[in-house]
Every structure is written in structure tokens, then in C-alpha cells.
Image (tube, rainbow, N blue to C red):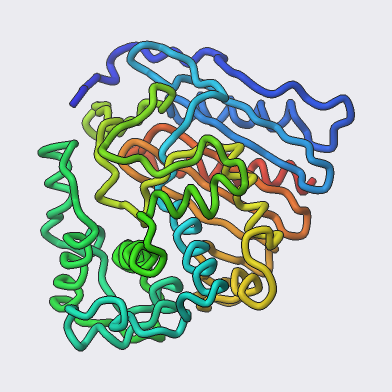
Length: 371
């Protein structure tokens, strides 16, 4: 574990890399880049990478600023890739929809069909309820008062968790807490770990191979993949935990992502993610009735549904999700009415500041493109 102290003078230069604007622009390149740099300097996030794609014109802003490696002052470039956390869930959910479209499973199947050894009280939960976060299950991570997984990671960044271990932890905590009503939305990773296991059982592929064969190869998302054996390429941006309460920075780049697996382990870049959500929103992955499911999930608020690893806000015509893992935080949005995709990725979790600077930047970019 690498520890730095904030007493070290932090100088955020205007280090950046971006795609040159098209000769005919509809997107406000300079205004968006300025917003990125202002958030970067205000937040003390080491580095930010963004992409904005206007699907009506094909125009893209792909821009990186700050540092991918803070300790060695290596700038963030468009060649960098980052851990995307729970944005992974949309890849997992769409994999389930692909299998449903192929007739290999039904969204209303009870999970007891796929997990014979689980206790009877869990067997009638459906695949759809796992996807929509109304299964009633508890999370092996956020709902664990003993913080077992987090403590294990702190003690050993290379600690490997099997999907079976994570499912068992989640089911045991669910028994302790009591299963919630299926009328209630409860966001948690246990649901999506179990979906990953179903993908493997039904398809015969490993989760990582299914994502590659059925999604990333098909869409030419060449910077998007599931890492295996805690091995990462050299262009992975370093990830940091910055705690202003105790003036400490911790490097979490080497944390094994098995602890989030099919709920949060993908690595990508901002450009790939914009192309991904554009493909999802425009039914390039799933067609017809199954494709319509992307916008019709479990109602969690007026005009807000959770479905397919994404939130859909009909009032704002926005499809989105955020993602956080140790050292990284990002957000992905698609403005359905404008056909514009926006991704904001950063290589830090910030503690001791009330603002979510990634969300603030996302909202600022949305404001700019809607203006």
C-alpha cells in the first residue's frame, strides 16, 4: 500500500490530451474542456477522462486531463483505461437479455432452477427481480455490519473472492437481516454476482469470455474487458483513495476486482462507454420486445425505473448509471431525446468533501449540451 501525505505540494497543471474538433462542430468543445479542468482543479482528483458523442452527427469529444499516475506525475491521456465499477452492471444485465432473446432463459425463471443448493426461502426469487434490484436480498458488501470483505481487502489487496463465496456471504447476511418484500427496491451487488453465475451456467462460457464474444468484440469496444488473475495492462490509470479527514492518499490500483466480479469488475475508457450506452439505447444489442425492457424496469420513484443495470429517468429522458470501486469513480449517461452519450471517469475516491465532483461534472456537461 502506498501512502502519501497531502502536505506535499499538489500542483495540477493543465495536462491534457484530446481529439481535435471536427471542422463543423455541434458540441461545445472548449466549454466542455474548460468544465473538466475547473472540476479537476477544484476537486483535487488526480485525473479525469471524458467522452461526449453526438449520435446524430457522429461527433465526439474525447478528452483527458490531470494525472493517470499522481506519484510519478504521468499525465492522463486518451490511451489510459480505468476501472468502471458498477457501470459493469449494464453489461451483465444486457448479457442476461441476450440469453433471454436467444431463448436460453426466461426473465421470470426462479433462481432455484439455477442454484439447486440454495435454501428454499431464496428459490422463488426471479431473474428479473435480481436485475431490477427488488429481490429482497442483502448485499455482501454494503449491508455487512462486520465489513468482512472490506477488511479482507485492506489486509490483502490481492485477496481473491470466488463468486460462490460472495453469493454465500450475501445469502447469509440476507438471512440475518430478513428478506425484503419484492415491492421494495434495494440496490446491492449480490443480485448481480448471481446474474454473472447464471450467465456462465446457461451459456457455457466464462463471464469474461461471454462479455468479449457477445458484446465487446461485436461492438469493437477494444479497450473494454474483464481483467483476470488480478493482472492489468500498463495503461491502466493508477487509482487513489484521498481522505481529507486524515490527510492521507492511498494507492488502490492493485486491488483484485474479484470482490465485485459481474457487479463491478470491468475496465474501459470513456469513449468505449459512450459507444456502449449508445448501442444499448438504440437497440443495437437487443431488439423488439426484449429491447424495450431497457426502459421499463422496477419503478423506484415517479418517472424513475431501475432496469438492465441502468436507471431510466423518463422526465429527463436520461439513461444512466454510476460506478465506484477502490480508487476509481465514474458516471455514464445517455440523453435519449438528444441522442448524446456522456462518460466521465476519474481515478480517485474522495473522502471528507461533501460534493460528488464526478456527478457535478456530468451535470455541467449535460447542461452545456442541452443549452
